[in-house]
Image (tube, rainbow, N blue to C red; front, side, top):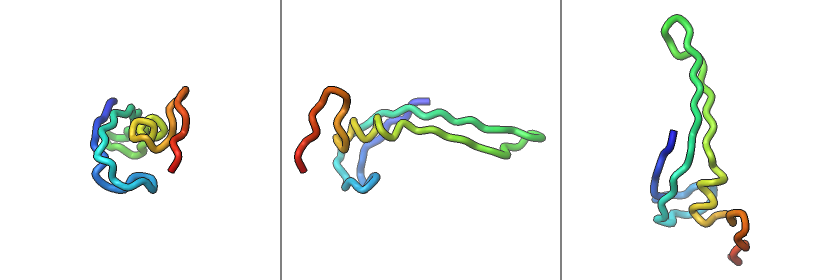
Length: 65
């Protein structure tokens, strides 16, 4: 699943930047008797942080704070 958003508030210690990012998510739900009884989720937080300029992407140099 793909999601897109704009950083309008604090995210992982970084103040709002107004930048947009798109990231991938995987969700696995275990069903039992027709009900969701467990959920596992994985989100590409590193890719999101790279798009927001919080960490350098591969091949990019870190920016001075």
